Length: 316
Image (tube, rainbow, N blue to C red; front, top):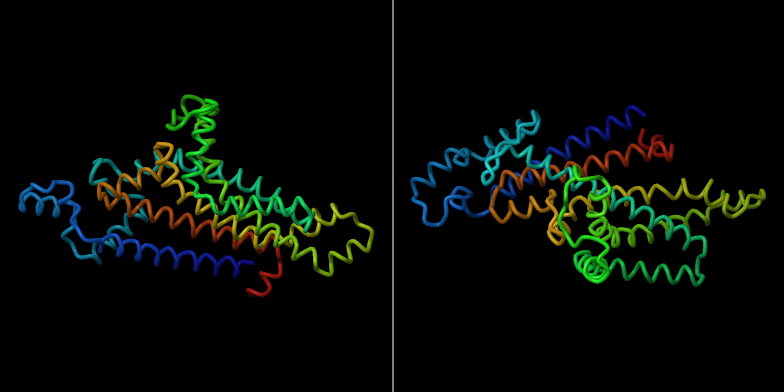
């Protein structure tokens, strides 16, 4: 088990290093000058040059990359070009909204997807199976920003049950904060739930055809007992893989949804920083999202070993 985890940790570290190099090179290779953007088109060449030196943009790429990585390791992400405040504090303020939004979306996704996937697998080729799978196909085809607009028109404009956008802050009450994030969470969850439901259905159906399931039924176990006690644990490996990737996608998917609902989260910060060419903020935010994706996949890999002991044996 220790060798298995060690290999996964080394893979995690190597992936983070590769991701940081790619992110830095792609963003710093973009045409244009951040100092020129900040000073404006009418700024003099001397003023732009002075700001370039002040921001450290005149140094070689390798030096800037190593300085950035060193800052990541010690928690010093630098100061925003536009806001003039530490990038770490900017990101921390926005994560207070983005992470709860992603968790809410994931809970809705898992609840809807597992319920639909297990139900359709248990009623394979019946009317309920066909109906639910048709709905999931529609869900996959729906752009989440368009579905978000429909939710706003229905629940905010017509029924006036929920706010159309904005976030009051957790200090005004947890329930009020949850209500303001409910429509964005559902908007993000619909497409992911449709995908996960189809994956769950396929995984459960595949396990239902295994010999040990027929043996369990032959011993007199009921269909429901076999499904919950024997089938689900074996079917969860591909489902967990998709769940891990989806949670990472939900974090990244907030960029669009937070702008639709005017939420001051990480996604909106990235959007604003791109528009302002605040590259240091964009770079750190993208690195954070990449690190979350890698870490989530690492956690899923480790959980595999607890769900299916054969993975540890084959890996060793």
